[in-house]
Image (cartoon, rainbow, N blue to C red):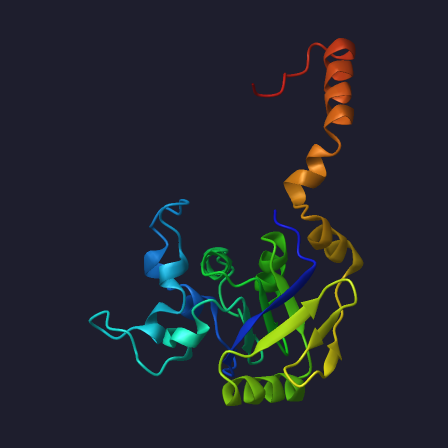
Length: 208
């Protein structure tokens, strides 16, 4: 997993509340296989970005060229509510989004972002609104998110502090996911399995 330390990037304002996971990644695309060559990025906010015939909606913010390389999204309250589909996070990641800033998140979606190397940032609703207003007034403006100091720096230089669980913070800073955490204990696990086979040979062996 790519470490998340400090991110300065173009930020997209999407001041809409209750964006659910089906809006982020419509369920009908869930049958598609995600590979490095065929990512979920093209389906991000598909029904918001495209019309019935697949034509881009010219005024939807993510279709504007200035936000093509955006890596931060500033949204409304309850972002990622609805179903628990992890594909919604895959679509964000595959589109280059590394952090979403919002007043609140759906609980499972919040956890899914952290599990996939994203940083969900919770800031007060009035702060998020002001950030969206500033970003809309200056299309292409950047925000800076510093995980070590747990701050977001706005285009005007204002700094806003956020909270994050210390364990998740360390995992993001070091680029460690749950599999990596288990593998850190691989020698102890192997030693236990060897001892178990020797002391209790009648027990089933672990799958090859």
